[in-house]
Amino acid sequence: NMKKIYLGLLSLIFSLNIGAVEKSLSTREMIGQLLVVGFGTEQKEIVKERLREGKIGGVVLYAKEVESPRQLTELTGELLEAGKSGQSEGQDHRRQTPFIMLDQEGGFVRRLTEKKGFTRAGSVPSAKKMKFFSEGEVMRFYEEMAQELKECGVNFNLGPVVDLDINPRSPAIGHYERSYGRDVDGVVQMASLFIEAHRSQGVLTSLKHFPGHGSAAVDSHFGFVDITETARCVEELFPYNFLAARGMVDSVMTAHVFNRELDGHYPATLSKETLQKIRELSGGEDIAIVSDDLKMAGLGRYGSVEERAVLAMKAGVDILLFASLGDGDLKKVISLIEGEVSFDRIKESYERVQKLKNKLN
Image 1: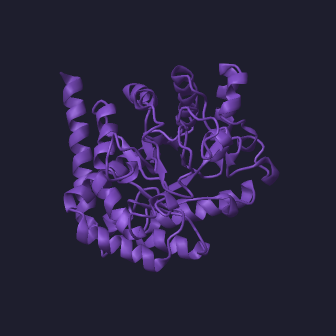
Image 2: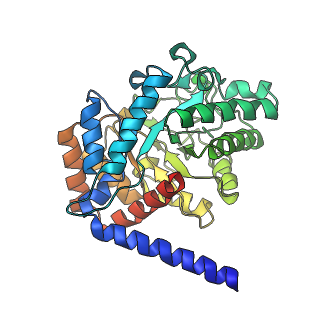
């Protein structure tokens, strides 16, 4: 009984905190906390100002923003300080820690490389090569990677990849050795080690690319991807189901892949029917959904960047990711979401993002 009372009090305190924050934030600021943006051609000072003003809730870093461990640590320190020191309109409210995201999978997909001085994170083999190592060795690789990310101020690694290697020649997955293999149990085992290593360092993770990119014959970076004839939905959803049931999922990243069997109109990132399966698979756990880059060519037929953002939010995406977004487009995204998406839907995503950020605090 005492345990139930204690848990009830904790839940009440959290609800009151969320309520207090909501009152101190405008709808536009709540939307801003759902946006994660890359530098693009922007300068560091502009990005810091966006964080201070609450126009964005985090940053995604790519290789060109990373020069060395010392430079990266200084950069993330400035970004984290800018995000946390921003204040709401007329309110004395310090925001929570901004997301500092990047893709550090190992192998070909890594922003921190040995050449730039990242001797631990940069030396991790590709997912495909992990089958040649013992479980202990794999864990050490991922622990050292997570440690270096943490030391350099990165708090969100966009991995692990749980796509099955259905098409080894897939230009986005198989070609770059990003899949652990076709065997579901092996994929789950390796992904679990990746997640456990990052959790030990307080670094968030994201399973990708839902509902499965491993069969695709086209890379969604460069064009429309239809996997209707090649997808193996039952197999491909199993890693998400199993890891969610074990409470190991911080977030799930969507794929810009179209599957007529799931939705006859929209690719996964923009499909309410498809993303609802994440909620179902999670067994009631409130998992945050992160979009892949909304500027990719794979979404080119679905309107402007801001129109895609609205469709993604209406579908159930909580964190909208853009590789780059100028001030003009950023204002358009925020304005259109405010005008087209219901407050309840915005609030729902905002609360999921805050729960995720609470893990960082």
